Length: 122
Image (cartoon, rainbow, N blue to C red; front, side, top):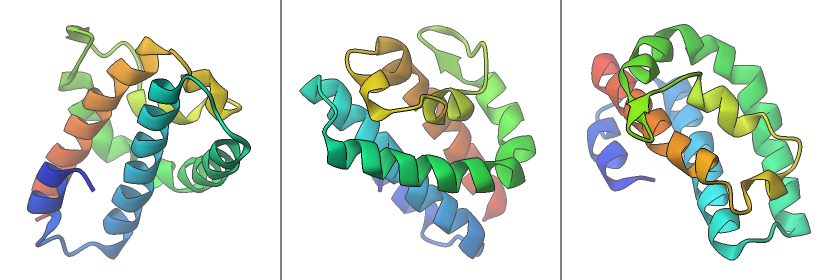
């Protein structure tokens, strides 16, 4: 888990939000790993498919609460043009993250929105 997120989530009461954070952390790690390695392995594709399925099912529960936070976050030095969460789990395969600076720039906006939501929930 992201160290700052871990710190602020330590007193989190919502188990559902904890599960969302856990999956989001796994997706973030996968995006960074595939970007750095410039290749997506079959294991990366399988992990992404599983995470995407879970997030696609559960994100609508959190989307309205996260929206004001990602709208306030910066993405590449500009206001986020669209939902960074949806943008990050939208690709069909993990290979979309290979060399994708746009996906890397979406990660901090999503993380900032998630951290702000956690602070609200405590």
